[in-house]
Every structure is written in C-alpha cells, then in structure tokens.
Image (spheres, rainbow, N blue to C red):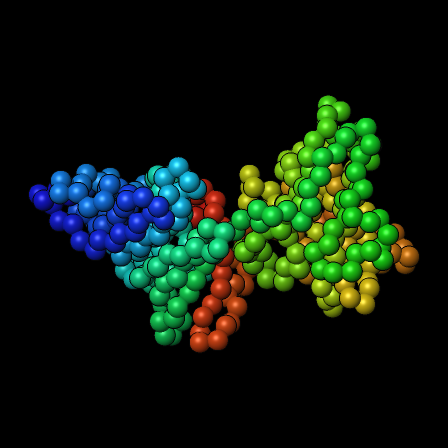
Length: 355
C-alpha cells in the first residue's frame, strides 16, 4: 500500500481453497476517503496497489466489510459493503447510507441499500452469505428513536426449479394436473401451453422457479402470497397460455402481477381471465398470459371471480415504483427488522426512489 497517503480500517478475507487473500481498506489517495480493494497471493512483503471501488468520486466512504465464498476458478464471489456519505447534505449531515458491491463480477457497480426513505444514519455493516452463496447484510440503523440492527437479503431465483421440462412445440405442455383436486399445497403450479404456441415453432425447455427474498413492499403494502420466475423469461407466445398457482388461504384473493424490469414496476396488463378457486387447504388463482416472466401473487381486496360463480377477471393498473407506500419493516424479536435488497444495477437508487 502507498505510504505517501493514509490507509485505515483494513478488512481481509481468504478464499475457500488456495492462498489468495482479498482486502478492503479506507484510502485518502483520491483526496477524499474511498474504499480500496486489492488481492494478494498470501501475505506479500511488497506494497499492494489497490484501486477504488467507489463509482461516485468526491464523497467519503468508511467502515468497509468483506466476505468471500468459493475460490478462483470455482464459483468465486467477493462481496463488499461500506458506510457511504454520497447522499449527505448540509441540512442532514447524519444521513449516511449503506452501499454494496459484488467485486468478483462487476467492479464499480455500487448498489444502494434502502433506508425506507427516512434519510437517517446507517453504519457498521457486516456481510455474510446463505448456504447457496447469496449475500446478506447487517448494519446499525438510526431511523427509530434508538439505534437498531437491520438486515437485508438479495433477491434471487432458487437454483432448484419447482419444475423443468423439455417441451415439443407441436404438442405443447400440461405440467402438473389440470384437475383442481390435484393442487393441494401452497406453491404447486399447473402450466398449460397449447400446441404450436412457441415462437418460430421451436422446441425448448420451460421451467418454474421460486423467487427468494422478494420485496413487494417496495410497490405495495399488501402481503405477497407467492412469487415465481417462469422461463425462458421474456418469451412471448403466439396464443394465451394458462397458469394456475396454489397459495395459502387468505381472507382476500391474491391479485396477479408481473414484474417489468425495464421500468421497475409491477403490472397487470396482459393478465386476463383471472379465476379463483377456494379449497380447504389452499386457494388457487388461474389466469391467462402471453409471456413468461416473474409473476407475483399479492393479497388484495379486488373483486374475485370464483370458479363456477361467474366470469373471469383481470386487468388493473400498474403499481408505480415511485410511490413511497408504507413502512416496509416486519417486527422480529429483539427489535430486528427485515427488508430486502434488490440486486439491480443502479448507480444510486435514491435517484429512482424505489425504496
């Protein structure tokens, strides 16, 4: 490290195999305090030449945290987090935030971890991973009367699909069982694709996977009853297909939305013929769509069309991601709170006001 400038607050993590080390520290070489990153083959006697991981120069960053999983050439992931001053102004000098980056894939992409729009203090981050290698963050947070501990988790698609199958376009697909009586547990799915519905009459592998750690509270205060990624995501069918999803019984029917990643909103346009079926152990929602994407079941109070009791429903308006909505915390013992970090590539989510 360069001894002509100041370096402080070092943190270090080793790969699961081999002798490569990953280091973060605070460095004032740019003229302000930035977070620098370097790797080293064991502990070298020679000075390390690091580089800043901050994508907005001219602001201060402190309190780095690092976590490494895997090893070079074998699913290496290097996660970093830090306290950031880029959103602080003279009217609120305590509005520090937590930022996050995955250094092993896209150095320079800083992800803002939302503060619920409170413009309050966040600091002292720590990073860990779940058994699948996806990151979790913990930090101290001053949005309430007392300083509390908050944590956030990344949103990801479960690598173990609920179902996957190679489908010939000439035959279509009817996965699960079209009989209502065969869907008896929350999360069970039926997908019915008519013959020759695939674009260009091509055969393909289709799948359904659960979305983990999702955060529909960014869009609405209503409870999420289920969320699934249908793939290949983005595929458009020549005719409508039918999807049926079972979810835990609730007092209000689950409205169906699909996620629009380009505009970061939940939408209902293109979802038609919505039907509801109430059973003793589960409730079912059946709908038609012409594309695969991420679909969310959000508990609502819209009028439901029960099968056998009248026609279908559908449609509705988009829920704007610009709406602040209600506070997104869930109370847990010992004053812990949950909200979810969406791993989307935003330079500064404050500018989008998505949280």
